[in-house]
Image (cartoon, rainbow, N blue to C red; front, side):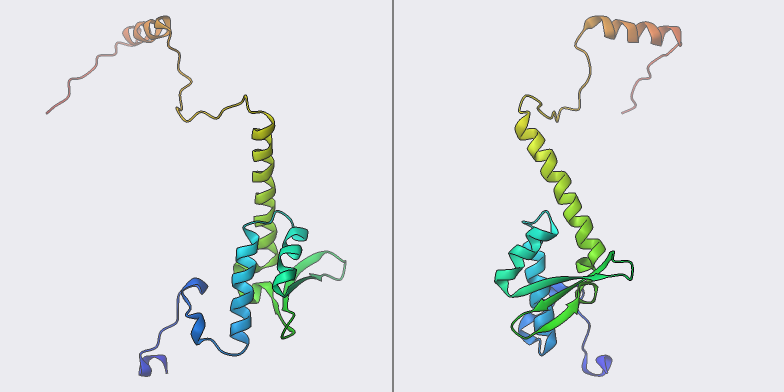
Length: 155
């Protein structure tokens, strides 16, 4: 049917024309947009819950028979519609969000470390070399012992 009418499937959720959506798809894409926007400022699941709550979205964990968390669901509180994170988008599955939050913690810890120890300055020069003339002389002596002969460049 898509070929008959010249229709194609959009690539990625970011390229979908939101104004043309209907029914549950409107809710699904609203949750997708709100969760992605909220993740930029969160470093834990608790932070994410706090940020989503005023936006009318609640978050619940799906647990295995042994009690361990194996998934996440998002509910639009206004319409009472619930979607599994992975069914909205793979990037909203429990494992994907958990990895993102773990990375945010690591980055946050590194930033805090930099603030606490301002005397350590990252260098972008990539150096490590010595400016001592003695080191250069050692290199030349080693090259002579190895019979190294530099070649002239052809032009």
